[in-house]
Image (cartoon, rainbow, N blue to C red; front, side, top):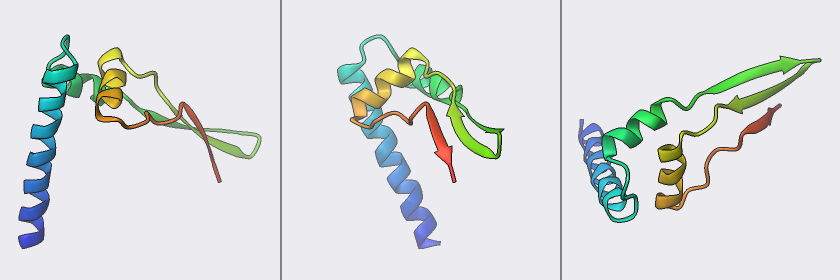
Length: 82
């Protein structure tokens, strides 16, 4: 139970930090718009000739900007799977 409460609290702190960063550095996007763009990102597994790759969809503009704002490299577009 305590672990669950701690995870929920950490999620709340992270959400507040993200909202603050977006307000400070992303003038043309709201928190809800960013979440909406991030929800559109998908990863699809492709298989051909006995090989597999994980391919992500293009990042909408606000999603890409959000990765930059928080200092995280966006997921690679194509990743080989073993």
